[in-house]
Image (tube, rainbow, N blue to C red; front, side, top):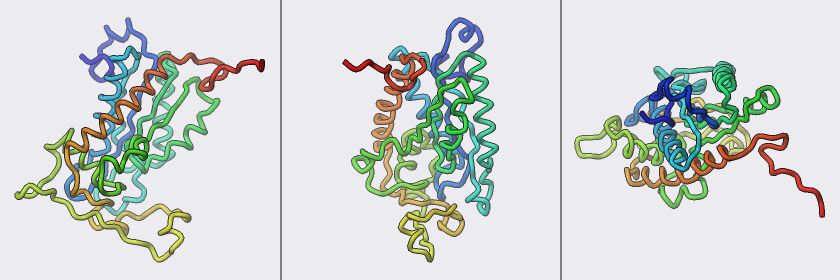
Length: 266
C-alpha cells in the first residue's frame, strides 16, 4: 500500500491518519494523433500525481492523491469518434461535489492537477471563492514548465506532440504505437490556419474545431520525442509540484491565507 494514493489505501489507515492536502488530477478521453492512447491525459495526470505525491510524502507532507477524473471538456472534438465530453458546467459540478467531500473529511487544501487543455478550471476557482471552506489551487502541469520547455524539447507542444509523446515513451511505452522500423506511427501534427489573421496571431480567440484544425487530431510534431526527455520533464515537475505540496502542507490557514501574515509598520 502506498498511503499517498487513496485508491490503494484502506480504512484502517485513513481512520488513524489525517491528510492535510488532496491532489485531484483532471484528465480526458480523446484522440491523440495516431500513436498515443485515448487515455493519454488520464495516464499523465495519474503518473505525474503519483510521482509528485510520493516525493511530497517522503518529505513529510500529509498528502493524498485522488483517482484521476477520466473525462474532460471535448466540445471542440465533437466530430472525432469517442471524444468523451463533459460540458464545462457538468465538469464544474463534479469537481465541486468532490471538493465538498474533502471538506466533509476535514481536508481543506486542494490542488487541481490538470492534464487537459480543454478543462478551463480558473472560472470555477472564482466561483468557489468564499463559497467553500476549501482553499483550492490549480496547476496546469503542462504550463508549469514553460521556462525550461526548450531546454528539454525541440518542437512546440499543443496536443500529442513531442512533450506528451516523450511522457508516453517514458511511462506507458506499451501504449505508444510504433511502426515496424521503430518509428512512431504518427503524422507530423500539422495544423491549419484560419482565414483570419487576428485568430492566427492569437489576439482573437475561438473554440478550435479539431476536425478542421488537424489531420489526425495531433497538433505538434511528435517525432523528436524520447523517453529520456519524458524523464527529464518528470524531474522538473516533481521538484516544482512536490515542493509546492510540502509548502502547502505546512502552511496555516488563517484570515490572510494564502498571503503572509501582515506586519505592523515600524
